[in-house]
Image 1: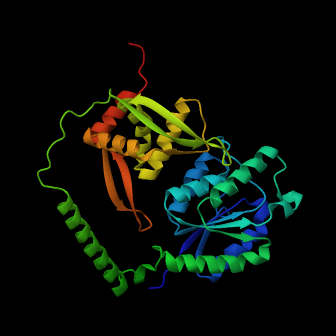
Image 2 (image 1 turned 45 degrees about the vertical axis):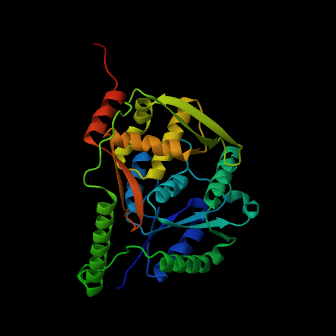
Image 3 (image 1 turned 60 degrees about the vertical axis):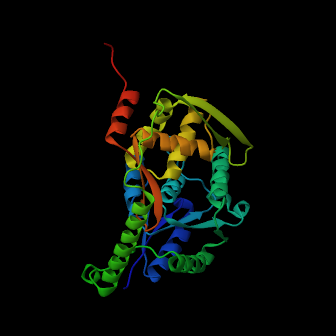
Length: 330
């Protein structure tokens, strides 16, 4: 079946007009559907909610980094970086194209503000950390780099794509549906085999007022020293920190990040990155499940992969409200 993949093109705009134009032209020649700021100005926080919906509809995310960090939100984070973080959280495959020699970029296309230049360096380091990236020097190089990189990504990680409505019920689609049905049956059978029908109830479970210790590491800056942190709170206090994030059914990895940031926030720290010690986190997760506060589901992502997702139960929602709602004077 002929599919057309939608690709979100993310970058600063004023300094990369020519580069974006060439990339978008290349995407159209590859029969892809380009999406990006040409369709909407990233002007405010409300607009970013619309941008998130557009990213949700995309199959791949293409990031171009030049010499500017870009306009920032009230949090001091650029819209380009927010788009990148959101794409990562949604599980999109990322193709990152970084300028090979930022020092050679004309002054008119770079950040004159030292703080923005530092944020750009931090953003570049974040993108390069544990990820294969491609480097470019001139706008003329980008079409070839995009064509090769995207073609390989589409072949290695085929996405859902878009098809014409009158072709959706083709034999190929029916075969895909049948394969998915078979996989679902296999997963259900494996789950049934792994879960005894009469699992014994857990006795003497510690409640939300019981103390529990969590620990981890963090960096204050991308190139900073990795420090350790420890915190001893009640299960209720820890649950109260993370519960509001569970309304959106986040992935297990995102819960770890948000929980680490929240605990460090209580300690007056604003980390660039943080990691939780795995085993205490796993115990905390199972404790909440045993108390009936959360559901854990290993299920497919919107892009066809598999991941563990958290959600609140009805009991968990009530507990969150009890712990977080601000009460008035009696």
